[in-house]
Image (cartoon, rainbow, N blue to C red; front, side):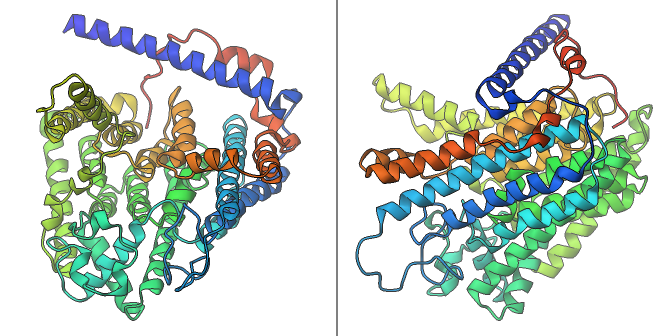
Length: 551
């Protein structure tokens, strides 16, 4: 054990050195190759500048809206009657315009880059200068949300599967046994990805209950059901913004910074609102439940966390961490038994009520790994399995079954994630239990069989109010890289430009170069630490960032 502990400390020191050098490298590149290098950090004045990043971010999101709304945009589903605008004609005439396709890709990528630049600088400003007015940030959220509410479902077709499952629920077809294909020739089947047309639902009974209610309220209209599901996820992100500010206050953190890192996070806006994923409503319940638990209302906290679990099962991590830390850091194992039993009873009661309301039993528990049919290189466990299989086949070992290799590597990924989760739970009081739960959720996603950008939001939102040390760097990095995971259009853009006319190439360079290098205003100078602060940030990187905290 002593040797293992020594190895662990050595790995931790190496990690801190590597991340510190990466941060220094990113900072150097920003100062040298972006307009930020023109500024010398000066004394912070006030928050009256917030209108400018609000407008710049809105511009970036409008570019995404316009680019994603072209008839042949690769970022949305192109079929008639699946959204209010931007869909192809029922009987298209001629060949789709390649110029419009390239313009769509340029606008979306350009808008993404501009949004990332604005949010990154704003996140640094609120970190260095606390006290950002929540009222102004809420107005910024409203402004930034509008383009994503208006836009067709972007980057994913999951919301069409939700709508089909809601229609199934409304007709008492069990979505835990049957797939959307059971609807036959229904228009609800139109937008569902063929991969999921025969797949049962992995979602909890609360979501299916809400889903079925929406299908009934919209009169079984497919387009209206999709639109209301989008509004449901907007409500989920509003819950996140409301809950995260209270969670931050309970942890003694700046609510303005937590709000920027969560509700204004590009990953949240693009995937939870733009993609209309039910992770929004799940995370909203989870955040509010955790905030209530910290405010000494653990039972109500458990109720809301159980509601989150009744939407998607990973929220059950919150039940475990609240129950384990209920009696405080000095509690013995015997003293922790009663809170664990209370949490179990509350969870069973909430899940039981919604199971009865939904009317389809606990079949969702057996469907939790249904997304494992997707083979994505973005997931390390899956990438390792695919890599081993490809190397073996190239070496002449043709009999090696890829599915078998994936089963082994994915099991190892789950085992490692589970081991880390148990370690984080055991050390929750020393490290801060909210922070530990956030890291456990992120590890479950990263080491799981499939890494989807919206899965990252679970842990990143909680980390927004509880991060320490280098975790801030990873929060920013994952939030910026996440939306680009699996994003289509890059190869089409490069190959298309090679054969395009000079005018289109010049326009592309102007748009992408403009969003990369255009000055964003004097306010960005306050996103850099002063000289003394910068020196403090570069001191000995071997300092242990896992010091005890009150979180």
